[in-house]
Length: 132
Image 1 (cartoon, one colour):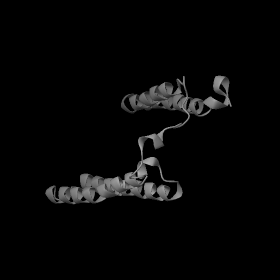
Image 2: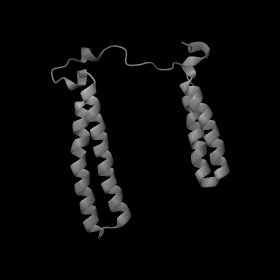
Image 3: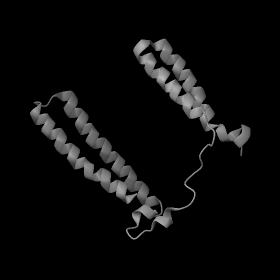
């Protein structure tokens, strides 16, 4: 994760320079200037998190400058083969965003469906065909 840490850490000074230049050019317009400085802080927090995480895990094949492609072979994780829950969750999120434009009652319906969809996705391996 050292590569990702360096990538995000290198973006922090860039965003600080951009925020400062934007501030001078816009006579320190408060919303845009604050947003750009907060963007620099957010990227810095991501770099810090990745740096701290890189200390606690073993080096990955991507972090080895002499690494071979074959070192990255193998199982990458467990994925649900026939899961419909992400689609239901996306529809619930779309309903929530529609509710922001149309009315709060639509948002509440989307939020209720979102809770059900998230619970179904999380509990997918606890029951049914793929239960462990």
